Length: 123
Image 1 (spheres, rainbow, N blue to C red):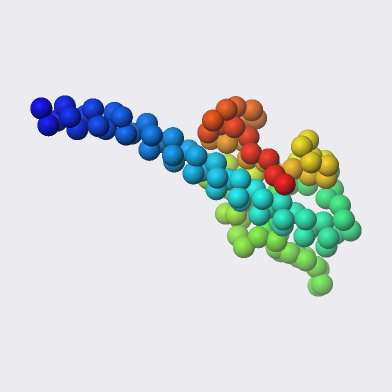
Image 2 (image 1 turned 90 degrees about the vertical axis):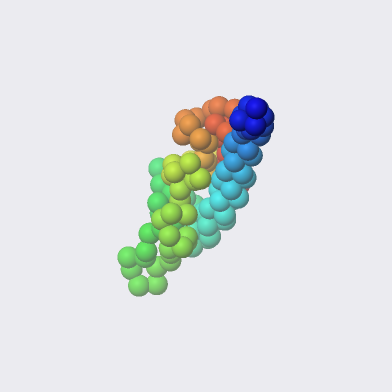
């Protein structure tokens, strides 16, 4: 009898816990994307106000090659990865914003989707 009660409780609580984990990851991804967007803004200031089309988000983790160069703009390459283990995408020009977008494709790593699979775009 106790096993049945525990099973019912687990069946009710488990979906709520898993949805909270998904919501938490979306919040973290949105916050991290906003931070990366700020880093891209700093990169733009240091490089003549533009991000060349085709530039990868990896540019934020690169060390300067010349004396007086700028960067890196993030603490580590791990900052370029969303909570689902996929690298953030830098889109130049942006689809949502004029200059650029920093995008996470959500849990499924594919464009589009709803819920935990929804895209997150900043700034």
